[in-house]
Image (cartoon, rainbow, N blue to C red; front, side, top):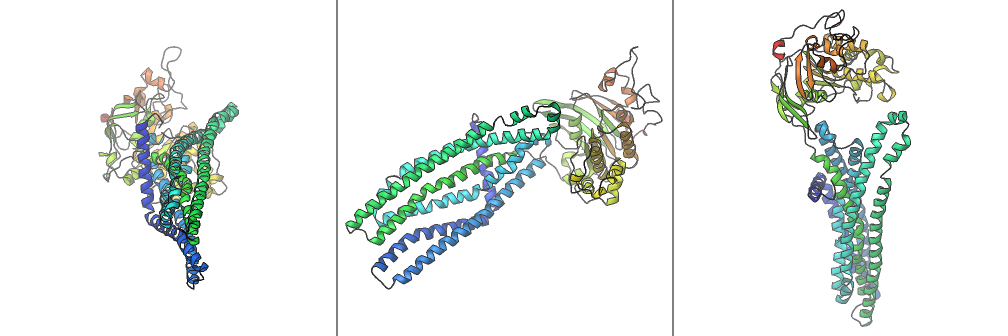
Length: 615
């Protein structure tokens, strides 16, 4: 969003205002109570000068009623102080609740959208939007009410000044237009400056998180100073915008601070003349001066207005997350006797204007292990994400046991479709809770350990200081160990479809074979969709799906596809010096030149039902 896009700016402003209204509605009771207390405090402040002036006149005349009116003065002052304290307490609660609502709503929408939509914002930007910007925006609802109520004493003071003496009111009114112009200019200039400051702040946060994530690469490349310069490149711009904001604020405060005393002196001078003429008493002069002071409090609205401006600007950053589209889900359930048949019909996926998958028609029978292969950029990971409904397709449908995935309930989908990734993220207090992580009832400890054994993780987990009870922070792991834990988590909650997106890339060949055997024998039977780079993974699969530039170029057993030189080139294998096909080595397994397409000493998996339909 840039200044050259007025339509987008207006839409963002409307979205921010809607978010702030919703946040205010979330704390409507506290906000209303705070407004009532604030109005009551303003009423007490307006009543105070009149009561003080009348009390002073009574005391000067030695009227017996003076003692009673003195008590009234004390009561009004005490009420004003108490109401201000209660207002501050309630507004603090409103700020906290509004901030919490903005954060929870933004985070919920972020987690419910497809990953490619979330990737529009860098991790650093997302962190800033949900932390500092949400805090600033959360203060806006109470600040709006506070700014509105803050106008009551000045306006009421001006009206009361006219009631006390018309000439003192006119004297004060003469300087009011200049004050209005000052406040209007402040709101305009500070709003633009605060917006630019927050944009630069987001960019800095994004670069910082990128640098932290790539700290090892930066250290290995010896580019720490260059990266530091890149991260901090916009720091002077941030400082300039911050100083500009404070100059605008300081300049406005200085002008209003200079204007207000001048108006008070004018009112005091006119009131003195009226007192000398006998048109105004001592108590009236005291009331006029006090009401002029309240009317001069219009300058103090600048601070409240600044909080509103900052809050609206920050709300635009946080509310941008509210516009992320949710991944729609239905309410349907899968048939209980389904084997896990996966079908893709006319699937087309477009990302950033580029067609990633086009016209994909595919049927994988239930119980089949299908390996997805292809050169880099062929769409393998996107196909895996679409097959497990981590991301939607732009055209076509994906069905599991005849039910479209977009019609399944979220609970049913995540119970029956599992995922394991190349770089898994672990969540939980300890290793056991990280492996049991997921929706639905938690698996029992024995099931967790069985899944770890199947993934080849049980041995190194038991060697940790506290075994499965070891805190994740105290369990340093290699890339292969981390992948094994990711696989164990997927195995622990395996449903009828399990999607492995390059989930064994960091495992050595022997461990990868053991995991594949355990997956076939020790994990709940079902359909497996494996994004594969190893020849051995393709060779052991019942079916290979060969992707090329987003299209399914061919499907079939690895042994049949291996006859095609272009298929061999996917694995970096071509022909030998004699021009004959160079098959994979025995330790990789599969392909011509070994003891068969499944490697030495291995046998092909049983032919699944419906194989001919797949071919």
